[in-house]
Length: 112
Image (cartoon, rainbow, N blue to C red; front, side, top):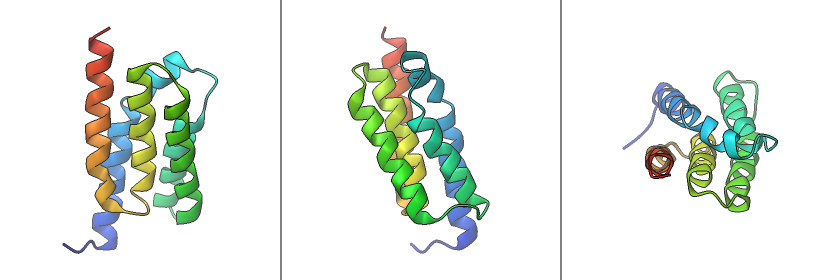
């Protein structure tokens, strides 16, 4: 399957929306850690042509590092959703992981 630029942007927008919906789960546990939020901001900047793929990729790595640093499962999954959303700038197929981690974040929140 081949992605056009439009398909890539639509996929990125959907991934952003899905990850943004669970960002608060992470921020409730780690209010001073802005790495997942920065990943989504970086993705949005890339979508507007204001950030490079390399910058977004680094922001994705940083959000995934935030996931490794937090003990709470729901927060961990939410941070991973944000990291995977940012990584869509590099590889559109990472969008499927956004969905998986967002669902896990919601489930872990409901299980508390």
